[in-house]
Amino acid sequence: MTRPPRAFFQPLAQGAPEPLRDLPVRLERVIHFLPPHIEKLRDRAARTAGEADVLCGNLEDAIPPDAKAAARAGFIDMAAKVDFAALGCGLWVRINGAGSPWHFDDVTQIIAACGDRLDVMMVPKVEGPWDIHYLDQLLAVLEARHGLERPILLHAILETAQGVANVEAIATSSPRLQGMSLGPADLAASRGMKTTRVGGGHPAYRVLADPGRDGAPRASAQQDPWHYTLARMVDACAAAGIKPFHGPFGAIDDPEGCEQQFKNAFLLGCAGAWSLHPSQIAIARRVFSPDPAEVAFARRILEAMPDGAGVALIDGRMQDDATWKQAKVMVDLARQVAARDPAMAEAYGM
Image (cartoon, rainbow, N blue to C red):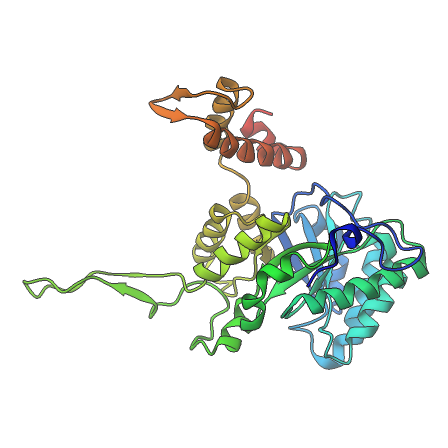
């Protein structure tokens, strides 16, 4: 259950900043994950920030237990040395879960050291609104204690069957919630799925055509086992006014498969995707930037119907209020991309 409407946007601690009523307008096509305990990768952070829209320090999965403290210290050091805001790059951190021995130090030490330089805290394995309520209260107390001027936002990772079952309640749990990402590897284990892949399709998950009378081989097509979950998450996020994201694609050696998964997520309504390797940054930047030809057609719709009223016939296709709203989504995103990416600004003619 969420807080009552009159109390929903009230600070949860005396002296804490007021919760945001609207999300900041930010381009977040690619969230690049960096293991902060590796010094040479931290040293490249400024260069990576010029390529990715968000840099996320990973303290959870993929960080060995004996490197957890070093990863936390490395993230704090990186946040102090690199001005990510000046580079136009968001700074996120994925903390360890509330049931881990590293969780409390992750939250308290990072807020104390990084303060307003941190934009978003990623929360793993969110199973219900209670996980967000707990961190909402804790962060408010820490923000008040350290004099933060704006709230740190939370991002829920959907990676358990219970989390999927509660996705709508999670999406409306707090004004601090920035968005959600699909975490396919842990979700597969939680569901008992028989795959070791991290996202993407599976050759055994197929639809088979009916047998023909001539006994010819039956046609079949590989399907997407994540479509239902991703679409449900997108709907929950859109209804709550937060952003949905595709999570990781683990096959670094399959850029074509990665690009197709990202395209599917983009078309469904996702704002961006995770990058686990530098080679995936360019893929996500390209996929989550609308196609220039599509943007050009969308602009023609807006020009023909400046206020969205009435109908217009463009290239034999009827346009009305619904297609005007679709066109506005496309053009608004193109403007955000153009503001960060000079090459795309030229392609869009902006």
